[in-house]
Length: 425
Length: 114
View (cartoon, chains in turn green, red):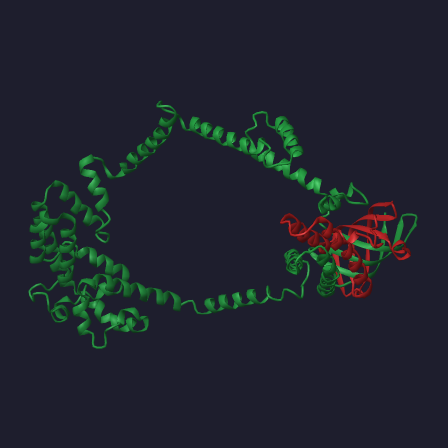
C-alpha cells in the first residue's frame, strides 16, 4: 500500500492507455493532436484532484517555493520599499511645483540634465532643490531664478502659479488680482506649504519662524484685496480655495454650475437623477407617450425578448423535428407562459445527452448497487475498489483477502497489490 | 459487475483515474472532437490496462480493520461499508484512519477465469 507509488503507476497507466488507443484513433480518422489533448486533459484533471504527486507535474511545486522565497525576501527587508516610496513622493512634489521654472533651475544644477528621471540621483541631488521653495527662499531663489525680479523673494514661485491659476479661471476679469499677486505674496502660498508638509513633514521645521510670521499677514491682506476686486461669486470661490488649497483645480466644476443654479454643492446629484428619468421617458415615448414605471418597461423588454427567442427556437428551425416537438411539449408543461427560455434550453441539452448514449449514462447507473450511490456522497469519497480472493465469515467476524486495489482516503490515493481486512459486524 | 468484451471489470472507472479519464473524454465528445464510440474503446482499454498495471506494477500490501456496517453480495460483487477503519500499510509503518469506507470488490477468480 503506497501513496508514493500512485504517481508512477498512474503515469504508466496513462501512457499505456494512450498508446493502446492510438490505433483506434487513427482508424477513426481522429488527429493525433486530439489524443495528446486527451492525455493532457486527463493528467490535468487528475492533478486537480490532488490525490498524489504525479511525475508529469513537477512544475506546480517550484512556483510556490519561489513565491515563498520572494515573500521571505520582501519580509526580511521591509524597510527599503517604504523608503523608496517616500523618495518618489518627495521627488514628485518638487517636480510638479517646480515645473514653471524647470528650465532656469536646470542650469543651476551642476550635473543636472536628466536628474529627475533617475531615482538614484534624485534622492540626494533634489534635496537642496526642494528646500529652495518652501523654506530658504531668501537666499536661494534670487540666484536660482534669475528671470524673476529680485524684489519678489518670498513665494515668487507661488506667485507665478497663483497668477496662472487665477488667469486660467477668470481670464480678463481677474487681471487686477493677478497684478496684485505679482505685487505681493500669493494667496496660494499656504496651499503649497500644506503640500510640502504632506510630502516632507520634517522640512517645515527647517522653516524659520519669522518667515512664517511675515507671510501670514501678507496673505491676509492679499486676500482682502482680492475679495474687494472680485464679485460675490468669486469670493465664494476664494473661500473654496482656502478650504481646499491643495486642489486648486477641483472646485472649478461645482462652482461653475452653482451660482447660476443657486444650488448648494450637496445637491449636484439631484439633476443627474432627473436626467435618468428623462432617459426612461424617452424610451417610453417610442411606445407610448405616457409615463411608464421601470417595472412596466422591464416587462415590455422581456416580452420582446421572449418573443424573439420563441421565434428562433420554438419554430424548430434549429432542431430536428422530434426534439422541436418534444421540447414544445416540455415547455408547455413547465412554463405555460413560455417565457423562460433558459428552462427550455436545459431540457434540450439533457435529452441530447441521453440520446447520444454518452459515457455519462454508463457511469451514472452504478452496475453493482444503485442504492449505494447515495452512500458515496455520504462517505465523502472514501472508497476502495478492488478484487476479492476470499471472503470468509465466522459468526460476526469477517475476513477478506483483497488484491489489486485502489483506495481514496482523506484526499489521498493509495494502491495495493494485496490486502487483508478483518472486521466485525 | 458487468464485464466488457475484453473480460475486464469496469470497476476502476469509478476511481479517480477512471473518472478523470471519462471527464476528459466527455470534454472531447462535447467539443465533437471524437465519437462516443471511440471514447468507449478508450475506456475498454483503460479497464484492461489498469487491471494489468495494478497486478504487475504494484507490490504494496495493506491490512485494515474496522467494524462492518453493511455487507452485500450481489452478482459476484461484494460491497462492504466499514466504519472506524484503520489501514496499515508498509508493514504497519504507515497508518491511516477513516471514519467510513466503502469497499466495492469484484471476484478475482472470475476475472482470471475468463
